[in-house]
Image 1 (tube, helix red, strand yellow):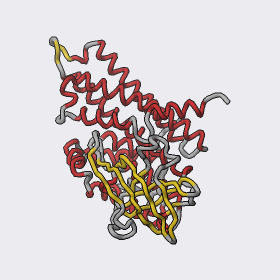
Image 2 (cartoon, one colour):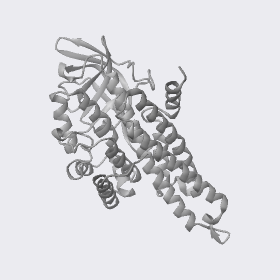
Image 3 (cartoon, one colour):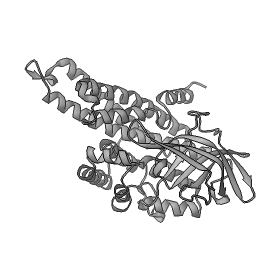
Length: 377
């Protein structure tokens, strides 16, 4: 598997790494976590670095990149523990809008690429769990409008978003609708209520209640009842991007752990000299490299047919989920009690690696999907 980066991709990686090293250290990350994000950084991602349009076509202000560029960006953001909703907006929501097409979607994609809008997908529900195909939220046609009723949970990025893409079941089947959060008393008629909270990994999310939320006819993205293939693809693209982000987190955690073990002395020598700890760090390294390879395989298959894409993404999600658990827990153990303090980066990375195991489908859910896809017929 040849995964050599082009000159342009190498420049993207190196430029983003330098930007984050100078403007997004751990202290900046914690400030963003407390406030829900930094608007100046988000605009820089869009206008200065072109990250938010990296996978978008040039006609909407993007740079015409693809899954490889997304992987490079996500890994760098994970390494710096960036809390801004890049995956949720620039990968998942932008992918749904791009495939839906139309003037409304195109105009919003231009705003995303420029860093002027935050759009996130509201799909998870308490009633349906990991099953996004049959949302309990309903949408009923009423004249020229649609009326939505239901609830969504753990919508990451919702408290700072301008738009939500809400999945709902119509008479024709699963559909997706674009809701303007800023239009208070307008399109949604004040019938959208958010319950924001800070997540364990220092991001901001919200539970969303929709009670008679009225939206215009053009809020429907794509065909009525035909949204599932695009939603499934967006979920796989989000899972692959989160896996790449996890690889960036694990590389940082491993490097910090090795450095700490070189500096921490016990019995007159650095603990890095103890063979049993060397074995543990080698095991951590192997898990990181296996995860990186699985992510690369998933990225190369994102543009393939649905079955091939699903098999590769689920394999990556299961591999990364196992590795994130092992690497995160091992790093905390090797750091001792310091591993979970607020002052040390390891504890923050550990919490992020823990939540990544459940984003866009849990490790167990992806193991089960991979087993179904690869089962003998």
